[in-house]
Amino acid sequence: MTSASRSYIGRFAPSPTGPLHLGSLLTALGSWLLARHHGGKWLIRIEDLDPPREAAGAADAQLRTLAAFGLVSDLPVIRQSQRSEHYRERLEYLLAKGAAFFCRCSRSELASHGGIHHHCFPAREQRPAAIRLHVPDEEVIWEDQLQGALRQNVAAEVGDFVLKRADGYWAYQFAVVVDDADQGVTDIVRGMDLLDSTPRQILLHRALGLSPPRYLHLPLLLDDHGHKFSKSSGAPPLDPDEPLTALRSAWRLLGQEPSALHTADSVDQTLHCAMTHFQIQRLPRTSRHIG
Ligand code: GLU
Image (cartoon, protein in one colour):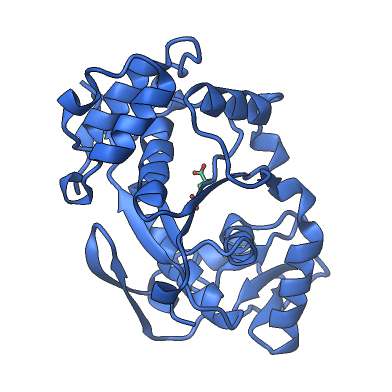
Protein backbone atom coordinates (compact mmCIF):
# COMPACT_ATOMS: atom_id res chain seq x y z
CA MET A 1 0.00 0.00 0.00
CA THR A 2 1.49 3.39 -0.89
CA SER A 3 1.02 6.29 1.49
CA ALA A 4 -1.04 8.12 -1.17
CA SER A 5 -3.66 5.37 -1.17
CA ARG A 6 -4.25 5.51 2.59
CA SER A 7 -6.72 7.99 4.00
CA TYR A 8 -5.18 10.83 5.95
CA ILE A 9 -4.42 10.43 9.67
CA GLY A 10 -2.55 13.26 11.36
CA ARG A 11 -1.57 13.83 14.96
CA PHE A 12 -0.30 16.25 17.58
CA ALA A 13 2.06 14.68 20.12
CA PRO A 14 3.00 17.00 22.98
CA SER A 15 5.46 16.05 25.70
CA PRO A 16 3.93 17.00 29.06
CA THR A 17 6.89 19.07 30.22
CA GLY A 18 4.80 22.18 30.94
CA PRO A 19 1.87 24.25 29.72
CA LEU A 20 1.23 24.72 26.00
CA HIS A 21 2.15 28.12 24.51
CA LEU A 22 1.57 29.90 21.20
CA GLY A 23 4.34 27.87 19.50
CA SER A 24 2.56 24.65 20.52
CA LEU A 25 -0.76 26.02 19.25
CA LEU A 26 0.84 26.81 15.89
CA THR A 27 1.78 23.14 15.47
CA ALA A 28 -1.48 21.81 16.89
CA LEU A 29 -3.63 24.07 14.70
CA GLY A 30 -1.40 23.50 11.65
CA SER A 31 -1.66 19.71 11.95
CA TRP A 32 -5.42 19.94 12.63
CA LEU A 33 -6.03 22.17 9.59
CA LEU A 34 -4.05 19.90 7.31
CA ALA A 35 -5.93 16.84 8.57
CA ARG A 36 -9.30 18.55 8.06
CA HIS A 37 -8.24 19.92 4.67
CA HIS A 38 -7.58 16.33 3.55
CA GLY A 39 -10.83 15.05 5.07
CA GLY A 40 -8.78 13.03 7.55
CA LYS A 41 -8.63 12.21 11.22
CA TRP A 42 -6.60 14.11 13.81
CA LEU A 43 -5.23 12.39 16.91
CA ILE A 44 -3.60 13.56 20.12
CA ARG A 45 -0.88 11.47 21.74
CA ILE A 46 0.75 12.29 25.06
CA GLU A 47 4.50 11.65 24.88
CA ASP A 48 5.18 10.98 28.54
CA LEU A 49 8.27 8.81 28.14
CA ASP A 50 10.62 10.71 30.34
CA PRO A 51 9.18 11.11 33.87
CA PRO A 52 12.07 13.24 35.23
CA ARG A 53 11.31 15.92 32.59
CA GLU A 54 7.56 15.91 33.18
CA ALA A 55 5.57 18.43 35.18
CA ALA A 56 2.89 16.99 37.47
CA GLY A 57 -0.57 17.38 35.97
CA ALA A 58 0.83 18.84 32.71
CA ALA A 59 -0.67 16.19 30.42
CA ASP A 60 -4.21 16.73 31.70
CA ALA A 61 -3.75 20.49 31.61
CA GLN A 62 -2.56 20.26 27.97
CA LEU A 63 -5.62 18.23 27.02
CA ARG A 64 -7.94 20.69 28.76
CA THR A 65 -6.27 23.60 27.02
CA LEU A 66 -6.51 21.95 23.61
CA ALA A 67 -10.20 21.22 24.24
CA ALA A 68 -10.79 24.89 25.15
CA PHE A 69 -9.31 25.73 21.72
CA GLY A 70 -11.69 23.26 20.07
CA LEU A 71 -8.89 20.79 19.32
CA VAL A 72 -10.11 17.36 20.38
CA SER A 73 -8.69 14.00 19.33
CA ASP A 74 -10.90 12.02 16.94
CA LEU A 75 -9.90 8.79 18.72
CA PRO A 76 -9.09 8.10 22.39
CA VAL A 77 -5.86 9.82 23.45
CA ILE A 78 -2.98 7.41 23.94
CA ARG A 79 -0.13 7.87 26.41
CA GLN A 80 3.33 6.52 25.74
CA SER A 81 3.79 5.59 29.41
CA GLN A 82 1.21 2.84 28.85
CA ARG A 83 2.71 1.37 25.70
CA SER A 84 5.85 -0.44 26.86
CA GLU A 85 4.49 -3.80 25.74
CA HIS A 86 4.18 -2.55 22.15
CA TYR A 87 7.69 -1.08 22.18
CA ARG A 88 9.08 -4.34 23.60
CA GLU A 89 7.48 -6.41 20.82
CA ARG A 90 8.89 -4.24 18.05
CA LEU A 91 12.29 -4.16 19.71
CA GLU A 92 12.37 -7.95 19.90
CA TYR A 93 11.60 -8.05 16.19
CA LEU A 94 14.56 -5.76 15.43
CA LEU A 95 16.88 -7.74 17.72
CA ALA A 96 15.78 -11.06 16.20
CA LYS A 97 16.54 -9.87 12.67
CA GLY A 98 19.90 -8.44 13.72
CA ALA A 99 18.89 -4.84 13.00
CA ALA A 100 19.40 -3.78 16.63
CA PHE A 101 22.10 -4.65 19.14
CA PHE A 102 23.07 -4.33 22.80
CA CYS A 103 25.71 -1.68 23.45
CA ARG A 104 27.72 -1.02 26.61
CA CYS A 105 29.83 1.84 25.27
CA SER A 106 30.15 4.69 27.73
CA ARG A 107 29.59 8.34 26.91
CA SER A 108 33.30 9.07 27.39
CA GLU A 109 34.33 6.29 25.02
CA LEU A 110 31.98 7.65 22.36
CA ALA A 111 33.19 11.21 22.98
CA SER A 112 36.52 10.18 21.42
CA HIS A 113 34.51 9.59 18.19
CA GLY A 114 32.55 12.83 18.33
CA GLY A 115 29.72 11.04 20.20
CA ILE A 116 28.94 9.03 17.04
CA HIS A 117 28.58 5.26 17.37
CA HIS A 118 29.95 3.12 14.55
CA HIS A 119 31.16 0.07 16.43
CA CYS A 120 31.28 -1.02 20.05
CA PHE A 121 34.36 -0.57 22.19
CA PRO A 122 35.38 -3.79 23.95
CA ALA A 123 33.24 -3.86 27.13
CA ARG A 124 35.61 -3.78 30.08
CA GLU A 125 32.94 -3.92 32.73
CA GLN A 126 29.42 -5.25 33.06
CA ARG A 127 27.48 -2.04 32.81
CA PRO A 128 23.78 -1.92 31.84
CA ALA A 129 23.34 -2.05 28.08
CA ALA A 130 21.51 0.35 25.81
CA ILE A 131 19.98 -0.99 22.60
CA ARG A 132 20.89 0.73 19.33
CA LEU A 133 19.86 0.46 15.70
CA HIS A 134 22.49 -0.61 13.15
CA VAL A 135 22.46 2.33 10.76
CA PRO A 136 23.35 1.59 7.13
CA ASP A 137 26.04 3.78 5.59
CA GLU A 138 23.88 5.40 2.92
CA GLU A 139 21.96 8.61 2.34
CA VAL A 140 18.34 8.85 3.39
CA ILE A 141 16.54 10.98 0.81
CA TRP A 142 13.04 12.24 1.38
CA GLU A 143 10.62 14.95 0.35
CA ASP A 144 9.25 17.20 3.06
CA GLN A 145 5.81 18.50 2.03
CA LEU A 146 6.84 22.07 2.89
CA GLN A 147 10.65 22.13 3.05
CA GLY A 148 11.21 20.21 -0.19
CA ALA A 149 13.82 17.56 -1.00
CA LEU A 150 16.17 16.68 1.87
CA ARG A 151 18.90 14.16 2.51
CA GLN A 152 21.11 12.98 5.33
CA ASN A 153 23.67 10.25 5.81
CA VAL A 154 22.58 9.18 9.29
CA ALA A 155 25.54 6.82 9.74
CA ALA A 156 28.01 9.66 9.17
CA GLU A 157 26.17 12.41 11.04
CA VAL A 158 24.44 10.58 13.88
CA GLY A 159 25.70 6.99 13.94
CA ASP A 160 23.93 3.97 15.39
CA PHE A 161 21.29 5.56 17.60
CA VAL A 162 19.63 4.49 20.82
CA LEU A 163 16.23 2.77 20.87
CA LYS A 164 16.23 1.89 24.56
CA ARG A 165 18.43 3.70 27.02
CA ALA A 166 20.77 1.92 29.43
CA ASP A 167 18.65 3.29 32.32
CA GLY A 168 15.66 1.38 30.92
CA TYR A 169 13.73 4.29 29.38
CA TRP A 170 12.53 4.08 25.78
CA ALA A 171 14.09 6.58 23.40
CA TYR A 172 11.83 9.17 21.77
CA GLN A 173 12.98 8.17 18.25
CA PHE A 174 11.82 4.61 18.72
CA ALA A 175 8.56 5.18 20.62
CA VAL A 176 7.36 7.82 18.18
CA VAL A 177 7.85 5.49 15.20
CA VAL A 178 6.09 2.55 16.87
CA ASP A 179 3.18 4.79 17.91
CA ASP A 180 2.83 6.47 14.53
CA ALA A 181 2.83 3.05 12.86
CA ASP A 182 0.36 1.50 15.34
CA GLN A 183 -1.99 4.50 15.03
CA GLY A 184 -1.82 4.37 11.22
CA VAL A 185 -0.54 7.95 11.04
CA THR A 186 -0.04 8.86 7.38
CA ASP A 187 1.08 12.47 7.79
CA ILE A 188 3.32 13.95 10.43
CA VAL A 189 3.05 17.72 10.79
CA ARG A 190 5.32 19.18 13.45
CA GLY A 191 7.88 21.89 14.15
CA MET A 192 11.20 22.32 12.33
CA ASP A 193 13.09 21.46 15.51
CA LEU A 194 12.30 17.81 14.73
CA LEU A 195 13.42 17.95 11.10
CA ASP A 196 16.76 16.31 11.85
CA SER A 197 15.04 13.41 13.65
CA THR A 198 13.15 12.56 10.47
CA PRO A 199 15.81 10.51 8.63
CA ARG A 200 16.36 8.42 11.77
CA GLN A 201 12.63 7.80 11.97
CA ILE A 202 12.46 6.89 8.27
CA LEU A 203 15.23 4.33 8.82
CA LEU A 204 13.31 2.89 11.76
CA HIS A 205 10.08 2.60 9.79
CA ARG A 206 12.02 0.74 7.11
CA ALA A 207 13.81 -1.52 9.62
CA LEU A 208 10.38 -2.42 11.04
CA GLY A 209 9.18 -3.34 7.55
CA LEU A 210 6.81 -0.34 7.37
CA SER A 211 6.42 2.37 4.78
CA PRO A 212 7.25 5.77 6.30
CA PRO A 213 4.55 8.43 6.59
CA ARG A 214 4.73 11.79 4.82
CA TYR A 215 6.35 14.64 6.75
CA LEU A 216 5.67 18.37 6.85
CA HIS A 217 7.80 20.54 9.11
CA LEU A 218 6.37 23.92 10.06
CA PRO A 219 8.66 26.84 10.80
CA LEU A 220 9.24 27.61 14.45
CA LEU A 221 8.15 30.65 16.31
CA LEU A 222 11.27 32.46 17.52
CA ASP A 223 11.81 34.71 20.52
CA ASP A 224 13.71 38.04 20.36
CA HIS A 225 17.04 36.19 20.56
CA GLY A 226 16.24 33.92 17.61
CA HIS A 227 15.63 30.89 19.85
CA LYS A 228 12.65 28.58 19.67
CA PHE A 229 9.79 30.23 21.52
CA SER A 230 9.37 27.95 24.51
CA LYS A 231 8.63 27.77 28.18
CA SER A 232 12.33 28.26 28.96
CA SER A 233 12.48 31.37 26.75
CA GLY A 234 9.58 32.85 28.71
CA ALA A 235 6.65 31.94 26.46
CA PRO A 236 3.46 32.62 28.41
CA PRO A 237 1.07 29.66 28.74
CA LEU A 238 -2.00 29.68 26.52
CA ASP A 239 -5.01 31.00 28.38
CA PRO A 240 -7.92 28.55 27.99
CA ASP A 241 -10.33 31.38 28.89
CA GLU A 242 -9.13 33.54 25.95
CA PRO A 243 -8.92 31.11 23.04
CA LEU A 244 -9.93 33.44 20.20
CA THR A 245 -6.98 35.84 20.38
CA ALA A 246 -4.43 33.01 20.36
CA LEU A 247 -6.28 31.12 17.61
CA ARG A 248 -6.21 34.25 15.43
CA SER A 249 -2.49 34.74 16.12
CA ALA A 250 -1.71 31.12 15.26
CA TRP A 251 -3.78 31.45 12.08
CA ARG A 252 -1.86 34.57 11.04
CA LEU A 253 1.49 32.92 11.90
CA LEU A 254 0.48 30.04 9.64
CA GLY A 255 0.50 32.61 6.83
CA GLN A 256 -3.29 32.60 6.43
CA GLU A 257 -5.53 35.54 5.53
CA PRO A 258 -6.36 37.27 8.87
CA SER A 259 -9.69 38.69 7.64
CA ALA A 260 -11.04 35.17 7.07
CA LEU A 261 -11.68 34.87 10.82
CA HIS A 262 -12.96 38.39 11.47
CA THR A 263 -16.64 37.52 11.66
CA ALA A 264 -16.18 34.43 13.84
CA ASP A 265 -16.91 35.09 17.50
CA SER A 266 -16.78 31.60 19.04
CA VAL A 267 -14.19 28.83 18.99
CA ASP A 268 -16.40 26.59 16.85
CA GLN A 269 -17.05 29.32 14.31
CA THR A 270 -13.37 30.25 14.24
CA LEU A 271 -12.31 26.69 13.51
CA HIS A 272 -15.06 26.32 10.96
CA CYS A 273 -13.96 29.49 9.12
CA ALA A 274 -10.33 28.41 9.42
CA MET A 275 -11.13 25.05 7.88
CA THR A 276 -13.04 26.67 5.02
CA HIS A 277 -10.43 29.32 4.21
CA PHE A 278 -7.19 27.39 4.87
CA GLN A 279 -4.74 27.53 1.95
CA ILE A 280 -1.78 25.16 2.02
CA GLN A 281 0.20 27.29 -0.40
CA ARG A 282 0.19 30.17 2.11
CA LEU A 283 2.08 28.17 4.76
CA PRO A 284 5.39 29.93 5.46
CA ARG A 285 8.61 27.96 5.10
CA THR A 286 10.86 29.98 7.32
CA SER A 287 10.75 30.81 11.01
CA ARG A 288 9.14 33.95 12.34
CA HIS A 289 9.66 36.14 15.33
CA ILE A 290 6.88 36.28 17.83
CA GLY A 291 6.42 40.07 17.45
N1 GLU B 1 6.76 15.05 21.73
C1 GLU B 1 7.51 15.86 20.82
C2 GLU B 1 7.55 17.29 21.34
O1 GLU B 1 6.70 17.67 22.13
C3 GLU B 1 6.91 15.88 19.44
C4 GLU B 1 7.17 14.61 18.73
C5 GLU B 1 6.71 14.57 17.28
O2 GLU B 1 5.85 15.37 16.88
O3 GLU B 1 7.20 13.72 16.57
O4 GLU B 1 8.43 18.02 20.95
